[in-house]
Length: 316
Image (cartoon, rainbow, N blue to C red; front, side, top):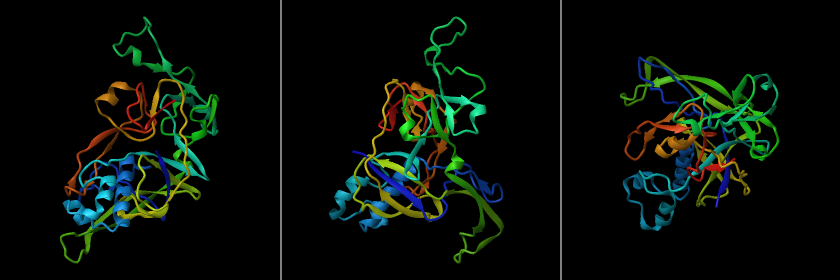
């Protein structure tokens, strides 16, 4: 059973890219937005712990009192992978859900100024004497002139699997703007935590437009009230989450599957991928080990596979 939520931040949100920010070498880093699914999963696990009064230090040390065993069985032990998955996140604009476009969708560049765009869907090339390659059965192409991929764009959920040749396509700028925030660096070796002399950092934050929120699904019912506060992203950014009514994801019959969330680039995913955008690399800070997580590669949401890799993949 899928439980759906939306999240409206109080201010901007900040999710750093993979670039290091080293004193004297770099003073800026790119932004990741919307955030990856595993970041939201961690935020939801933390929210459950906070609302049930579970001390995080005890949780991290594995010393939670027995009366909280039921909660721990739902959120998982510290250091373990989340026992539930996150579907999305998507954008919710004025009550309408917008999901990633499949990377097998293309459209003429001249139509970019219009939100209604005619879609060309790539199809298998099949056997031909013109091309000689071991990957022939996995080669797809789209017919048309001056086409561009719609991977990274967004389509209305109701139109994702519809038979219409024209679909409403929106871009990131229709949902949020990017803001550069510059601040001081702290001297963490000083007990008074004073400003580090002559050192600034600049990062890019995302600000959702009015009427826009993040929407996501949780594959397990969590012991949370229908509304509450959720901390998400760096700098202790927070906002209000609300449980949404039940939503049904569309389903096609193309025998091709699109991932609705970032997908780890493991051997199985690599073998069955036929269309994807630029790979994403995520690391982060491991709160359990108190050390950096190893960098891992992920397929972006909208990537298309010949097999349903996990429950986040829907048939187109």
